[in-house]
Image (cartoon, rainbow, N blue to C red; front, side, top):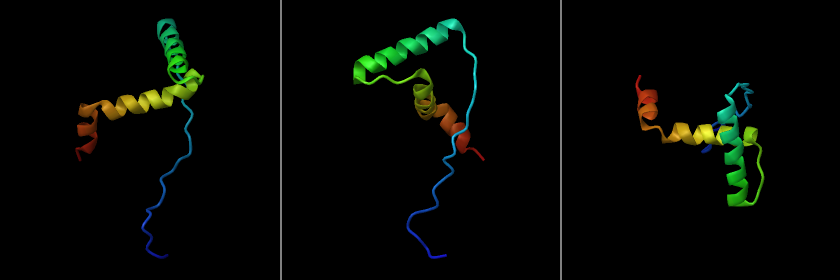
Length: 71
């Protein structure tokens, strides 16, 4: 196989996770989806927003990032 500049693309197969949330969190997520629609003029479902919300949270957690780097 030739040496390519582009490394192999990582696995992008989605993994489905099912969770249950309390009613107050459910309402907050719906409120966030409405705030997103108001801010960007495009409606997105809570289910579509959650992966990006989780990714943003994990990327902003410096203690978690340090813990992941430890051998």
